[in-house]
Image (cartoon, rainbow, N blue to C red; front, side, top):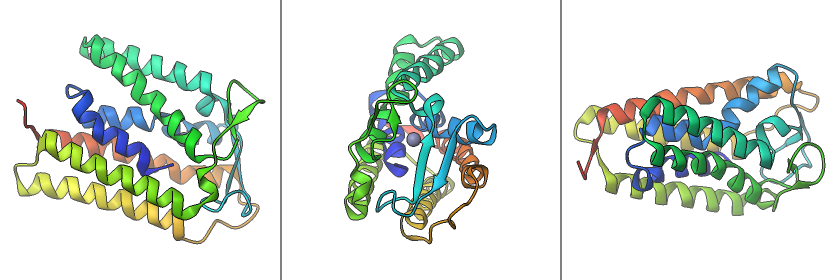
Length: 220
Ligand SMILES: [Zn+2]
């Protein structure tokens, strides 16, 4: 899952309005932001397997530190702790724990059974990825609904603000469509080469923070 996670980050504006879009974007994707770092360190592994699912040719062989059920909860608590320390807003910090954990829930819906509960076995996943069209409809639907929710909570008063927001949305959609319908990486591509581009996802955290700086809450 990709833009479905960002849907949570956008829609969080209604549920946790005090959190900046930069924070909610970091929270909703925290597990995927950590994942490429762990792969590059040799702690987690991924491979190309064209028969994996219809949606993705990636086989997530081993990624318990970033993506197990227990670790998702722990990463959520760590994020919530730091959020609370930096903002002093405990209620919103608690909501951030839930937003981090939402990543695991959405991955559980889409991934085949490759998500560990703790470390190796058992692994779970409902496998929406077995249907490419089902995945795209589900994720794009979530993303579109989230944009509508976000724009009800926030106004983009200047041309610049609108440009920053809509370019972020378009860029996320373009990356998603390229991943969904573009050619798969060649067989035998090493873990590190597969995961390294995912580091660029950190860019979206800063881009979202930039949107936040240029937006105005409608309830303010
Ligand atoms: Zn993930």
